[in-house]
Amino acid sequence: MDDRALLDTIRDLIGTEETADDCASFELPDGTILVSSTDMLHETTDFPIGMTEFEKGWMSVAVTLSDIASCGAQPIQVLAAVGLDDPKRLVPFMEGAVTCAKRFGAKIAGGDIDSHREFTVVTTGFGIVDKKFYCRRSGASAGDAVCVTGTPGCAMAGLNGDERYRAHLLTPVPQVEAGQLIARAGASSMMDVSDGLAISLYDMSEASNVGFELDSSRFKLPDVSSGSAMEYYLYGGGDFGLLFCIPPAGLSGLDVKYTVLGNVVSEKGVWCDGKVLEKRGYAHHW
Image (cartoon, rainbow, N blue to C red; front, side, top):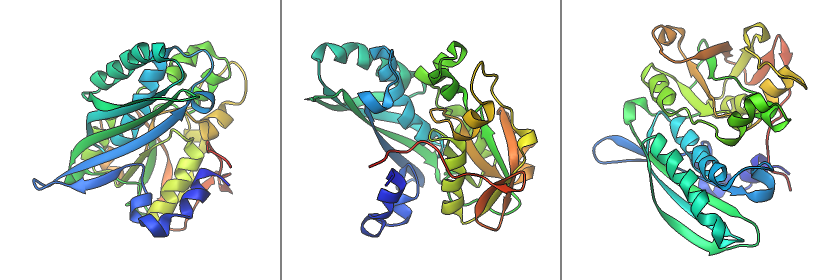
């Protein structure tokens, strides 16, 4: 069983809408939306070997800010709960966390410290967005263009030893400004691709009750020194680009680097060059 299947077992308890996105939302009296997201990272499963404590701090905050960015929101606060196997790790870790938060206009506002056998971090972030620009995974419509920012696959290339992409892997950059620009351009749906492009397309297909027809000739594959660029592009995790759907007219004047992957169709599913795209990506398994 993977984490998506496990989540299905509690949807009736929590609610379908509440489990459809990486962020929760709450409408404030002034009409803005408060979004929140939380992530848990473990030393053995989430931090590549060789990372510095600073880089672990940066990544821990970045993964949560990426979820907030995918809503079109501005991050404002992050809470960090750190389970430490060695207390000397805390200061350099927090230096990375604070640096990342400040870079994107947020603040480390508190958290918790505990003793733990395995170095474990939980980050919870908060952001705000005007209600009319709030984006979710749902909302895509047939005829929309489906697009992605950045170049999926770079982090996986870095994980497999390509030093040119080491920074993509260790200090990923959440697309906070791009998310806000995309939302204001009229995006109908948006999410990040940290679990991989293909699995993210399936997640968005499920949430929006639509499908996607992709054209691989449009893909801007990473230049890799080993392995398959197409494999990395479609199935590699760790990239913080934004997958979004938008009426074609909204693309004119959008000041963001993006790639149009294909089109939204009414039938649920994901196809590439006329063939069903394998549903695969990063997941936790039990």
